[in-house]
Length: 629
Image (cartoon, rainbow, N blue to C red):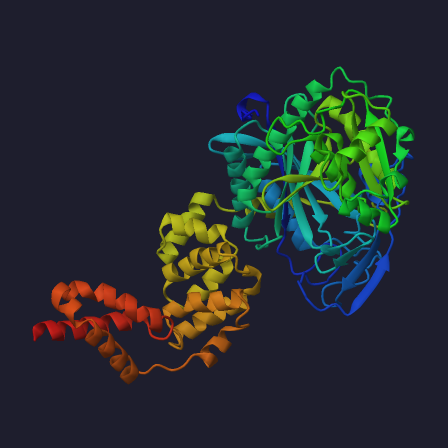
C-alpha cells in the first residue's frame, strides 16, 4: 500500500463556518431560541420535489426525494410558532441578527452590499418544514490573517438554522423545531493549499474572531465547519458536520487519502469499458439463492427482498483493490446503497464469504456467463427501492473511471467520511417571494464599523490582567464553552485559577473518560461554586460532583450535599490519630517526609468530605508533636 504525501497531491481545502448568533429571538419570528425536551405538538409531512424556475431538478434534492421518507415534527410553543410549522409567512428580519452579521463582515474587511435579497435554498431532507432554507448574501471579499498570511473570504451570508434531527429510521425521520430558524452566519473562505494543521489554525482564528464579538453562541452544535476538499484532477467534495477541531484535521487527512486513492483506482480502470453498463443487464437471482446457507441472504429472502446480480467484464480485483488502508471501491458502493435502507452489497473480490460458499459463487459465475477476469456484485432490497439502489451502484462504478466525483459527504466521529448525497447545483436557489429586499443603511454600516471586535491579543491581555490567569489558561477559558459562565462565577467566587481549571481541565478529563458532558448543565456548575463559597462543600468535592452528575448518579449538586455524611472536627481527629498510630514506625524513620504518604492514605477516605488543606495542616501538627517527643 502507498503512504499519502499530502504536499504532492495538490490538496486544497476551503472552509465554510456556520455560527449561531446569540440573539433573543429567531431570524424571521419572535420565538425564543430555546433547547427544550418537552414537545406537546407533533405533526407529519411528506416533502415533494419541485423544479427550479428554469424547469430543472436539483441533483441533491432529487436524490433525497428517492428515499420517500415520512417526516415527523415535534414542537413546543415556547420555542416555535406557525412560522416554523410553515403555516404562516415569515415575519420581519431580526435586527440584532442583521447587526451582528454586519459587524462580523466589517471585522473580516468584507464589502457589504447596500441591498440584499432573501433566497430559498431547496432542502427536502426534512430539516426544514417548508422544503427550503432562507438565506441572504450580505457581503463578499475580505480576508482573515493567519500566521502572517491572508486567507481570502468568498462570501458572508445570514441564514436560518435547520431543525434538530432526533431519529432517522428506514421509512421515517423525526425532527425537533427548537433550532429551526435560529440566526446563523455562514462564512465561506477561499480554498487554500497547506497542511491540515494550518487549516486547523484557520478554523481556530476564525472561531476566535467570532467569539470576540461576544454576539455568538457557544456549546456543542452552535458552530459547524463544512470542509470543501479536493486534490489535483478531482472534483470538489464537501464534508458536512465537522464540529470538533481535532476532528477537522482527521477529516482532511482521510479525504486526501481517499481522493488520491480513488485516482489510483481510476488508473486501473483506464482500459475497462464501463459506459455501456445498464441495470437491464442485471439478473434476478432470488430463487437461485433459496438454498444458500448465508444468514444475511436468508434474512433478505424472508423479508421479501429482491436479490439481483450483475457481472462486469474485466473487473476482477477492482472492487477490493486497496491503494490505501480501508480505501476501496467496494466500500464506496456499500455507502451509496445504505441510503435506500439496504445494508450493502456483496462483490466478487470478497466471495466466498458471509456464508456464501464456493459452489454458489461458481454457479453464479456460470449463470452470469463470466470469465475468470470478470467481476460481479450482488444486491438485495425491497421491490420499491432495488431499482434506485441498482442505478446508484452502476452510476458510481462509471464515475470511478474519472477518479473523484463531486459529492457531499458527512464526517464521522472518528474522522472518516461517508457518502451523503450528490453535490447541489445551480437549480437549488430561487428568490423568496414573501420577504422584501433587505436594505443596509449608512447608520447600520457605521454602527458595524464602530463595534468591530478587539484583537485577539488585546482580549487575552485583558483576561490575564483581570483574573490573574497565565496566557495558556486564558486561551483555554476563552476557547471553551464556558467563558460567560466563568466570568459570572468569578464575580462571586474569588479564585479564578481554580474556576478556570475546573471548567477547562476537570470537565474535559471526565469527558475523555467516557462521561456524558451534556448532563452537566451551566446551572449545575454555578450551584457547585455557590456551595463552595458557602463552605458547604470542599474543593475536592467539585470534581466528585461533576463526575456523579456526568454518570447519572445524581441529578443536582444539592443531592450530593444532602447525601453527604457530616464529618466533624472530633471525627477527623480520631481518624487521623488512627492513621498515625498505624504508621508510627514510618513517622519515626522518615520524619516530616512521612506527611505526603499519610496524606494520601487520609484522602482515599476523606476526599470530598474534608478539605485537603485542613487535613494537611492537622497531619503536620500531629507529626510535629510526635517528633518533638
